[in-house]
Image (cartoon, rainbow, N blue to C red; front, side, top):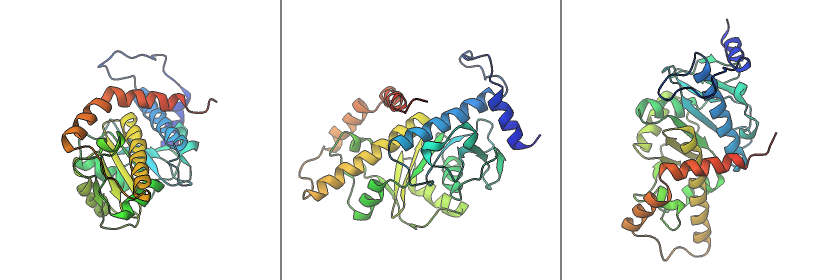
Length: 260
């Protein structure tokens, strides 16, 4: 059976076990279906949050069987992604499952995950605010709640190239610049966000966009005179953005999606 036919079979034959026992692996095919649904839902949330750049930008989740990443297929905008528009891509760029084409920048996802065993999801967008703020060369200051999720220390930055990340070598360089951080600005390009799961990665992407937009507004007004100390910013990070609250933010973003 062809990869695309296998994927269609998974999508068209849902399991009757809607609530598998915690700690027990879902029935064969169920974990794939859940991955497809979660990635496609995350893409639509990003689209609704104005993270689309026409059909460019992508979200991925680590394959639980270690084959690569499940990521948005190319040629579709975030808001158009459905489970059948998600493909499984291996570290060499081969499409193992699904009928769609892969994005040329798949190494962003495969190499970040190869470098970070704690990462289960990666987002790359061409956020206007992230591109504009990155071009200023200014540090990202904790002037707002959102800013404290990324600073201190100052947000990581990838400056090797503003071109597309189309080779494994560039993917590794980006992963190195990201290090153990939750996000990095890709100068003259966009952003990359890494998190344990799709929900956290998507919420973090939207918060980084907001933090960059806030600081651009402040720079346009003449620059900041006040921002949180490192001690206060780290305290706010714990109070404002623990996992439970990021999950609440995700739930809200899902509720905002257009019905139907």
